[in-house]
Image (cartoon, rainbow, N blue to C red; front, side):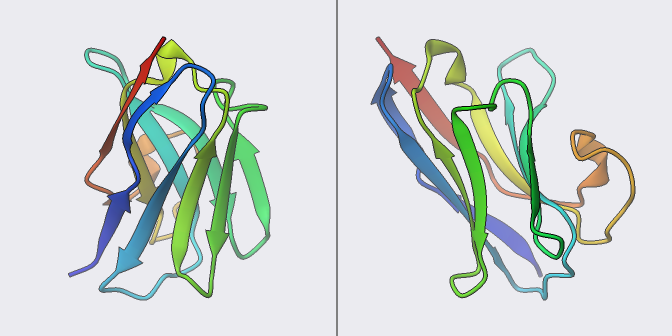
Length: 126
């Protein structure tokens, strides 16, 4: 059974950097969009960044613009989210996702994705 395994969470101080990783396993990737989302308690899931590997196109949401970078290395079969200049509001749970059926629609639409990682907690302190 296919899954996305996340790693790399933890605690950092404001202004520091952190990198999250996500490894697909148990299935063959189709080339659909890969993305990172985050969700704070009581809030909706927010799209941070997406990557269309086949077209080598990335896009960032407003919260990630200028600070976060999404990347995928085919030889490692890993998806990364590099987060720089961490802020206090960057504390919620982070999730990677894949649209393995290559459904249409905006990358920020969470229901587009059928594969999800288990979530990674990130804590930012002053």
